[in-house]
Length: 286
Image (cartoon, rainbow, N blue to C red; front, side, top):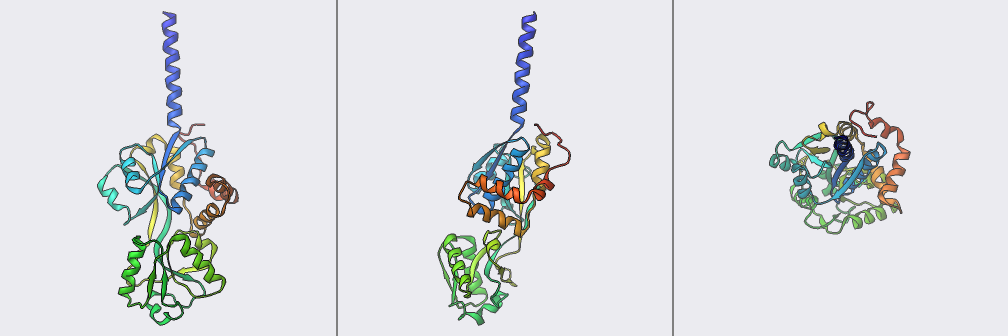
Protein backbone atom coordinates (compact mmCIF):
# COMPACT_ATOMS: atom_id res chain seq x y z
CA UNK A 1 0.00 0.00 0.00
CA UNK A 2 2.80 2.36 0.95
CA UNK A 3 4.63 1.44 -2.23
CA UNK A 4 1.55 2.27 -4.31
CA UNK A 5 1.18 5.64 -2.61
CA UNK A 6 4.85 6.39 -3.16
CA UNK A 7 4.52 5.60 -6.86
CA UNK A 8 1.46 7.85 -7.15
CA UNK A 9 3.29 10.68 -5.42
CA UNK A 10 6.32 10.30 -7.69
CA UNK A 11 4.16 10.26 -10.82
CA UNK A 12 2.26 13.34 -9.59
CA UNK A 13 5.50 15.21 -8.97
CA UNK A 14 6.80 14.34 -12.43
CA UNK A 15 3.57 15.50 -14.06
CA UNK A 16 3.58 18.75 -12.09
CA UNK A 17 7.20 19.40 -13.04
CA UNK A 18 6.48 18.76 -16.71
CA UNK A 19 3.53 21.18 -16.56
CA UNK A 20 5.79 23.88 -15.13
CA UNK A 21 8.34 23.37 -17.89
CA UNK A 22 5.70 23.38 -20.64
CA UNK A 23 4.01 26.51 -19.29
CA UNK A 24 7.35 28.30 -19.45
CA UNK A 25 7.76 27.73 -23.19
CA UNK A 26 6.70 30.31 -25.79
CA UNK A 27 6.90 30.05 -29.57
CA UNK A 28 7.19 33.17 -31.73
CA UNK A 29 6.68 33.14 -35.51
CA UNK A 30 8.29 35.73 -37.77
CA UNK A 31 8.70 36.46 -41.52
CA UNK A 32 11.91 37.33 -43.36
CA UNK A 33 11.25 41.06 -43.02
CA UNK A 34 13.91 43.27 -41.47
CA UNK A 35 11.61 44.79 -38.88
CA UNK A 36 10.02 41.40 -38.11
CA UNK A 37 13.41 39.81 -37.49
CA UNK A 38 14.54 42.74 -35.32
CA UNK A 39 11.40 42.91 -33.16
CA UNK A 40 11.25 39.13 -32.76
CA UNK A 41 14.85 38.70 -31.65
CA UNK A 42 14.42 41.63 -29.27
CA UNK A 43 11.32 40.07 -27.70
CA UNK A 44 13.00 36.67 -27.41
CA UNK A 45 16.01 38.09 -25.59
CA UNK A 46 13.84 40.00 -23.12
CA UNK A 47 11.69 36.93 -22.43
CA UNK A 48 14.79 34.77 -21.96
CA UNK A 49 16.10 37.31 -19.42
CA UNK A 50 12.83 36.82 -17.55
CA UNK A 51 13.25 33.06 -17.40
CA UNK A 52 11.22 31.88 -20.41
CA UNK A 53 12.23 29.31 -23.00
CA UNK A 54 11.55 30.78 -26.43
CA UNK A 55 11.37 29.01 -29.77
CA UNK A 56 11.53 31.03 -32.99
CA UNK A 57 9.71 29.83 -36.09
CA UNK A 58 10.47 31.41 -39.48
CA UNK A 59 7.71 31.22 -42.11
CA UNK A 60 5.71 33.14 -44.72
CA UNK A 61 2.78 35.27 -43.61
CA UNK A 62 -0.08 32.91 -44.56
CA UNK A 63 1.35 29.91 -42.65
CA UNK A 64 2.08 32.14 -39.66
CA UNK A 65 -1.56 33.20 -39.29
CA UNK A 66 -2.79 29.67 -39.94
CA UNK A 67 -0.48 28.34 -37.23
CA UNK A 68 -1.65 31.02 -34.76
CA UNK A 69 -5.30 30.29 -35.52
CA UNK A 70 -4.76 26.58 -34.89
CA UNK A 71 -2.88 27.23 -31.65
CA UNK A 72 0.35 25.73 -32.98
CA UNK A 73 2.24 29.01 -32.50
CA UNK A 74 1.89 31.46 -29.62
CA UNK A 75 2.90 34.93 -30.80
CA UNK A 76 3.48 37.09 -33.90
CA UNK A 77 5.01 40.57 -33.45
CA UNK A 78 4.85 41.93 -37.01
CA UNK A 79 1.13 42.19 -37.80
CA UNK A 80 0.34 45.23 -40.00
CA UNK A 81 -3.10 46.75 -39.39
CA UNK A 82 -5.69 47.99 -40.20
CA UNK A 83 -5.21 47.07 -43.88
CA UNK A 84 -2.34 44.73 -44.78
CA UNK A 85 -3.22 41.76 -42.56
CA UNK A 86 -6.87 42.51 -41.79
CA UNK A 87 -8.04 39.74 -44.14
CA UNK A 88 -6.53 37.14 -41.79
CA UNK A 89 -8.55 38.51 -38.88
CA UNK A 90 -11.66 38.19 -41.01
CA UNK A 91 -10.76 34.66 -42.08
CA UNK A 92 -9.90 33.46 -38.56
CA UNK A 93 -12.40 35.56 -36.63
CA UNK A 94 -12.01 35.21 -32.85
CA UNK A 95 -8.81 33.15 -33.09
CA UNK A 96 -6.38 35.96 -32.20
CA UNK A 97 -5.64 38.27 -29.29
CA UNK A 98 -4.17 41.75 -29.79
CA UNK A 99 -1.52 42.27 -27.13
CA UNK A 100 -0.12 45.69 -27.98
CA UNK A 101 1.16 48.13 -30.58
CA UNK A 102 4.87 47.83 -31.37
CA UNK A 103 5.11 50.67 -33.89
CA UNK A 104 2.53 53.24 -34.96
CA UNK A 105 3.98 54.86 -38.08
CA UNK A 106 4.41 52.02 -40.57
CA UNK A 107 4.12 53.32 -44.12
CA UNK A 108 5.38 53.09 -47.68
CA UNK A 109 6.11 55.86 -50.16
CA UNK A 110 8.78 57.72 -52.09
CA UNK A 111 11.77 58.84 -50.05
CA UNK A 112 14.37 61.55 -50.65
CA UNK A 113 17.35 62.95 -48.71
CA UNK A 114 16.46 65.78 -46.33
CA UNK A 115 18.45 68.31 -48.40
CA UNK A 116 16.18 67.81 -51.44
CA UNK A 117 13.79 70.75 -51.96
CA UNK A 118 10.76 68.66 -52.94
CA UNK A 119 8.36 67.76 -50.14
CA UNK A 120 5.44 66.29 -52.07
CA UNK A 121 4.76 63.98 -55.00
CA UNK A 122 2.94 66.92 -56.59
CA UNK A 123 6.28 68.77 -56.83
CA UNK A 124 8.17 65.99 -58.61
CA UNK A 125 7.26 67.07 -62.19
CA UNK A 126 9.21 70.32 -61.80
CA UNK A 127 12.29 68.52 -60.49
CA UNK A 128 12.52 65.73 -63.07
CA UNK A 129 15.90 66.98 -64.30
CA UNK A 130 17.36 67.02 -60.80
CA UNK A 131 16.46 63.33 -60.39
CA UNK A 132 17.51 62.41 -63.94
CA UNK A 133 13.93 61.29 -64.52
CA UNK A 134 14.46 58.14 -62.41
CA UNK A 135 12.88 56.60 -59.34
CA UNK A 136 15.05 53.86 -57.83
CA UNK A 137 12.88 50.90 -56.90
CA UNK A 138 13.32 47.42 -55.47
CA UNK A 139 12.20 43.98 -56.70
CA UNK A 140 9.58 43.85 -59.45
CA UNK A 141 6.11 42.81 -58.38
CA UNK A 142 6.38 44.11 -54.82
CA UNK A 143 3.43 46.09 -53.48
CA UNK A 144 5.42 49.30 -53.19
CA UNK A 145 6.47 48.99 -56.85
CA UNK A 146 2.84 48.66 -57.96
CA UNK A 147 1.91 51.69 -55.89
CA UNK A 148 4.78 53.67 -57.42
CA UNK A 149 3.59 52.82 -60.92
CA UNK A 150 0.12 54.01 -59.92
CA UNK A 151 1.62 57.22 -58.47
CA UNK A 152 3.52 57.92 -61.68
CA UNK A 153 0.22 57.80 -63.58
CA UNK A 154 -1.84 59.67 -60.95
CA UNK A 155 0.61 62.55 -60.59
CA UNK A 156 1.61 62.68 -64.28
CA UNK A 157 5.27 62.01 -63.53
CA UNK A 158 7.69 61.80 -66.44
CA UNK A 159 9.88 59.36 -64.52
CA UNK A 160 11.10 55.82 -65.16
CA UNK A 161 10.80 53.36 -62.29
CA UNK A 162 14.06 51.43 -62.03
CA UNK A 163 13.83 47.81 -60.88
CA UNK A 164 16.62 46.71 -58.53
CA UNK A 165 16.59 45.23 -55.01
CA UNK A 166 16.50 46.44 -51.44
CA UNK A 167 20.31 46.30 -50.97
CA UNK A 168 20.94 47.86 -54.41
CA UNK A 169 18.50 50.67 -53.65
CA UNK A 170 20.17 51.54 -50.34
CA UNK A 171 23.62 51.33 -51.96
CA UNK A 172 22.60 53.89 -54.59
CA UNK A 173 21.03 56.05 -51.88
CA UNK A 174 24.27 55.96 -49.88
CA UNK A 175 26.33 56.86 -52.95
CA UNK A 176 24.08 59.80 -53.83
CA UNK A 177 24.02 61.19 -50.28
CA UNK A 178 27.82 61.07 -50.02
CA UNK A 179 27.95 63.23 -53.16
CA UNK A 180 24.92 65.26 -52.01
CA UNK A 181 23.14 64.41 -55.25
CA UNK A 182 19.37 64.29 -55.67
CA UNK A 183 17.79 60.85 -55.61
CA UNK A 184 14.27 59.51 -55.05
CA UNK A 185 13.75 55.91 -53.97
CA UNK A 186 10.92 53.60 -52.99
CA UNK A 187 11.01 53.35 -49.21
CA UNK A 188 9.14 52.17 -46.17
CA UNK A 189 9.11 52.65 -42.44
CA UNK A 190 10.42 51.10 -40.32
CA UNK A 191 13.77 50.71 -42.11
CA UNK A 192 17.36 51.00 -40.89
CA UNK A 193 18.16 53.65 -43.52
CA UNK A 194 16.20 56.20 -41.45
CA UNK A 195 18.74 55.66 -38.67
CA UNK A 196 21.71 56.11 -41.01
CA UNK A 197 20.59 59.11 -43.08
CA UNK A 198 18.49 62.25 -42.77
CA UNK A 199 15.54 61.38 -45.00
CA UNK A 200 11.93 62.39 -45.58
CA UNK A 201 8.92 60.62 -47.07
CA UNK A 202 7.27 62.75 -49.74
CA UNK A 203 3.70 63.81 -49.03
CA UNK A 204 1.09 61.89 -50.99
CA UNK A 205 -2.09 64.04 -51.14
CA UNK A 206 -3.92 61.49 -53.33
CA UNK A 207 -3.13 58.66 -50.89
CA UNK A 208 -1.82 56.41 -53.66
CA UNK A 209 0.49 54.76 -51.12
CA UNK A 210 -2.32 54.48 -48.58
CA UNK A 211 -2.37 55.76 -45.03
CA UNK A 212 0.05 54.90 -42.19
CA UNK A 213 -0.49 51.54 -40.51
CA UNK A 214 0.61 50.24 -37.15
CA UNK A 215 2.53 47.09 -36.28
CA UNK A 216 0.66 45.01 -33.72
CA UNK A 217 1.70 42.11 -31.50
CA UNK A 218 -0.90 39.35 -31.75
CA UNK A 219 -1.21 35.96 -30.08
CA UNK A 220 -3.30 32.85 -30.34
CA UNK A 221 -6.58 32.85 -28.47
CA UNK A 222 -6.07 32.02 -24.79
CA UNK A 223 -2.41 33.07 -24.65
CA UNK A 224 -2.95 35.94 -22.18
CA UNK A 225 -4.76 33.67 -19.75
CA UNK A 226 -2.03 31.03 -19.89
CA UNK A 227 0.92 33.47 -19.92
CA UNK A 228 -0.27 36.71 -18.24
CA UNK A 229 3.23 38.02 -17.45
CA UNK A 230 4.59 37.34 -20.96
CA UNK A 231 1.44 38.76 -22.56
CA UNK A 232 1.74 42.00 -20.59
CA UNK A 233 5.47 42.26 -21.30
CA UNK A 234 5.01 41.73 -25.05
CA UNK A 235 2.11 44.17 -25.07
CA UNK A 236 4.31 46.83 -23.45
CA UNK A 237 6.96 46.75 -26.20
CA UNK A 238 6.63 49.97 -28.19
CA UNK A 239 9.29 51.59 -30.36
CA UNK A 240 9.61 55.03 -31.94
CA UNK A 241 11.00 55.64 -35.45
CA UNK A 242 14.49 56.24 -34.11
CA UNK A 243 14.42 53.29 -31.73
CA UNK A 244 13.26 50.68 -34.24
CA UNK A 245 15.58 52.06 -36.92
CA UNK A 246 18.56 51.89 -34.58
CA UNK A 247 17.62 48.33 -33.59
CA UNK A 248 17.45 47.25 -37.24
CA UNK A 249 20.67 49.08 -38.03
CA UNK A 250 22.49 47.43 -35.12
CA UNK A 251 21.45 44.00 -36.41
CA UNK A 252 22.28 44.89 -40.01
CA UNK A 253 25.74 46.25 -39.23
CA UNK A 254 26.89 43.62 -36.73
CA UNK A 255 29.45 41.00 -37.71
CA UNK A 256 28.05 38.63 -35.12
CA UNK A 257 24.67 36.94 -34.73
CA UNK A 258 21.27 38.63 -34.41
CA UNK A 259 21.24 37.64 -30.74
CA UNK A 260 24.58 39.30 -30.08
CA UNK A 261 23.42 42.45 -31.85
CA UNK A 262 20.17 42.57 -29.88
CA UNK A 263 22.04 42.11 -26.59
CA UNK A 264 24.25 45.07 -27.48
CA UNK A 265 21.18 47.18 -28.34
CA UNK A 266 19.49 46.22 -25.06
CA UNK A 267 22.63 47.21 -23.16
CA UNK A 268 22.50 50.67 -24.77
CA UNK A 269 18.74 50.99 -24.16
CA UNK A 270 18.45 49.30 -20.76
CA UNK A 271 16.13 51.87 -19.18
CA UNK A 272 13.69 51.61 -22.10
CA UNK A 273 13.66 47.81 -21.96
CA UNK A 274 13.23 47.83 -18.18
CA UNK A 275 10.20 50.09 -18.56
CA UNK A 276 8.44 47.28 -20.47
CA UNK A 277 8.86 44.70 -17.71
CA UNK A 278 5.62 44.32 -15.70
CA UNK A 279 5.97 45.39 -12.06
CA UNK A 280 4.21 42.30 -10.76
CA UNK A 281 5.46 38.97 -12.07
CA UNK A 282 1.95 37.52 -12.22
CA UNK A 283 2.05 33.97 -13.57
CA UNK A 284 5.79 34.20 -14.15
CA UNK A 285 7.91 31.10 -13.62
CA UNK A 286 11.50 31.57 -12.54
